[in-house]
Length: 201
Image (cartoon, rainbow, N blue to C red; front, side):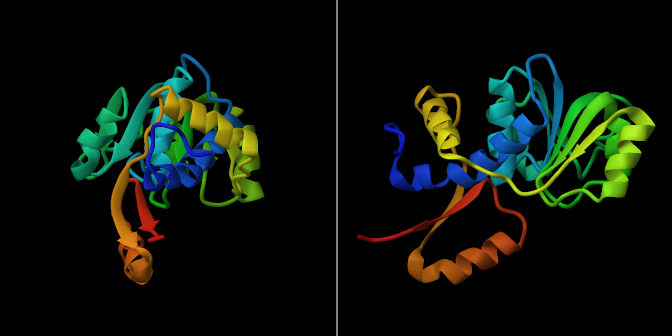
């Protein structure tokens, strides 16, 4: 069911980014008091992840470009790093690193994780050699794969939206007849949050 306090296009922006990020943050066992880094904090997965990690009680650092710093701050991030000006890596700083875009060094991430920390990638299943190396080298865990969003997850997200803990970020809306242009815009890799297709009835 659509959240009562949302339009249809706003609601359409929730399942993908928020559903995937909920799945991966839970896989990483996000919890209160952790220091969490979200790389790609201004995209569909990242904007949701910032809000979800804050809801779960984590101290959140978001990494994004200069143009998106204020957006990520507005979502509740405790700290925002501009990757065009500053290196996000800090030795043994984070309990969990959530990687949503393909622009991050695995080796640098491992250095930034505390012993026992978790590296979560929404892009692909990490090669087994990386998982073994991380485990042996620092008792760190590497998680990847494909998100599995269940009906109960959508109900949970609906409740968060209605309680004011989660809101979608929509960059652009395109009518269905312009769906090819919508894809071209997304493929440029600079969108903020989500792009939504609207359908006339």
